[in-house]
Image 1 (cartoon, rainbow, N blue to C red):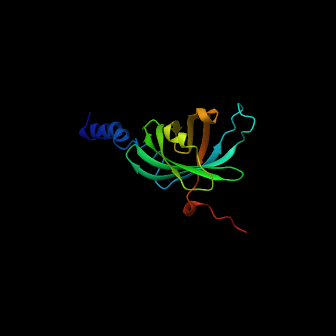
Image 2 (image 1 turned 180 degrees about the horizontal axis):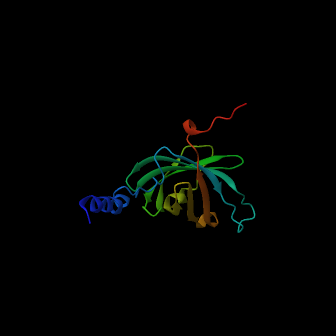
Image 3 (image 1 turned 45 degrees about the vertical axis):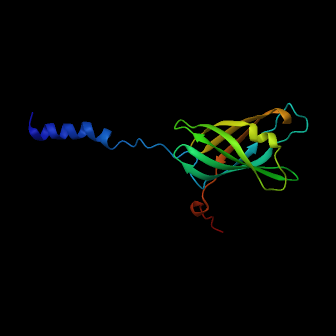
Length: 154
């Protein structure tokens, strides 16, 4: 086999490994905004779905700070979450402070652990509040950044 043939075969074999894109999407990118719903808990007759948002305020490796907001018919309440998102998307967080708003979480939220899962486009959060009826869940999708939204022609 000629040197040229060997070189070509080596390039064909090695290039896919050298140029393979092993990069994973950034889960919970800083300054990202997520919209979704705190889901209705059928165990509570008074419960109903509520609009909810997540704003990623800070990231440092796997660590994050998020502002989590729930909007009810007469109020908007927020809590700051600090935690981690593992490379496989597993979320673990604690509420560190109640955010000033038109409405408020019960102080017991500060004792709760939030768990969940993040992908490049979706986030779910789960938490328990025994004083407020047990388990809760919220699901979110990533909002497209305003500067990337498609313009619609009129």
